[in-house]
Amino acid sequence: MRILFLDDEREANVVVNSYLDKELYPNKEITQVYDYNEFVDWIEKNGIPDWIFFDHDLGEEKTGMDCAKWLVEKLRKEKKQIPNFFIQSANPCGAANISSLLKCYEKFYNENLR
Image (cartoon, rainbow, N blue to C red; front, side, top):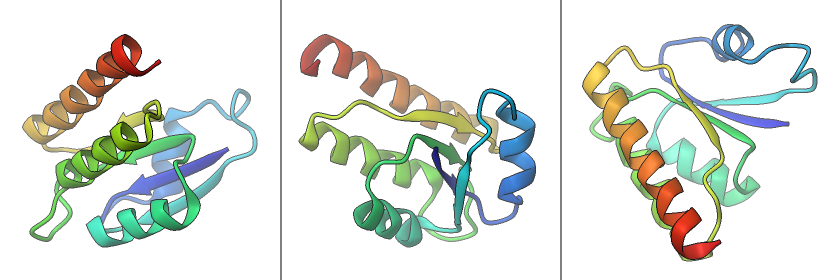
C-alpha cells in the first residue's frame, strides 16, 4: 500500500502508524513530501497513492489546501475516485477546508463520474 504523507514538521511513520492499524495495513510504503511542489511531482511521477495524509500549514506560500485543490482537479480530469485520506493539521480551519473539499469531490464523483 502506497501512502503519501504531506507535512513539513511531523514524522510520517509516527503519524501513519498511530492512525492505521498495523494488522489491517501491514505492508506500508510511506513517502513523505514537505511542500506543494514535491506533492505534485510525486503524484505526477508515481500516480495516485492509496492514502494521502494532509497537513495544511507547510511553512510556505502554498498550503495543503493548494495541494488538495490540485489533486481534485487532476482526479476530475481523469475521472478518478478520491483516495483514502487523513488530515493531521493543527490548523482547525485549514483541516476543515481540506476535508470539505475532498468530501465534496467524493460526492461529485459518486453522483456524476462513477
